[in-house]
Length: 206
Ligand SMILES: Nc1ncnc2c1ncn2[C@@H]1O[C@H](COP(=O)(O)OP(=O)(O)OP(=O)(O)O)[C@@H](O)[C@H]1O
Ligand SMILES: [Mg+2]
Image (cartoon, rainbow, N blue to C red; front, side, top):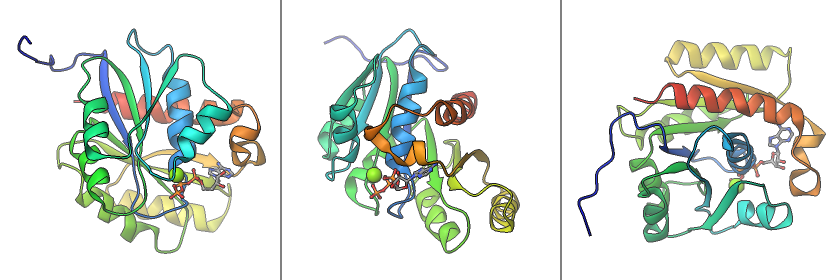
């Protein structure tokens, strides 16, 4: 094998890790939508990696495959590492909740970290924990999922992140069409919102 190197700023490769220590916040939904909007953004392939042994992303993909997206089921440090060590393509990695070794392996190889979260409650503490596992120089932003637009709770949450200096890369409204998962086609509104999130994640790339 020849020497392996990756040019800095090479637009044909990027590892985007979707992670939050907390469960049920929107990681799988965010991963699937990000992979879908990544198609056509790049000459390379789009790979959706399901690093969660629950297999929700894989189930979604099997029920409703996305054209142009390849699925890799990789719930082990080895398989996640292998998928993320590719030299081309946009790799979107859905991770399980918690701080396990697979999550750490994914975060350590990330070029950008997308942190799905919800408005209100104890969310910030969990996100800080995810940020703690992310290498310092890697761009990270939160996406407020299933947001109730126009509520004080949402406004206060955005303010909170701004004060903490954690960028808000997206606010995705609560929609039945998005909650339907693989039972329905990807929602055009969801695709629009996640398209913006992807641009932020890719634009922040070093
Ligand atoms: N914008 C949205 N509007 C409505 N429902 C949403 C939205 N985003 C996510 N959800 C719903 O929230 C629930 C949790 O989402 P999801 O499964 O993506 O979270 P997760 O973080 O992957 O969960 P887990 O930790 O179990 O893997 C799901 O029922 C999903 O359909
Ligand atoms: Mg999930």
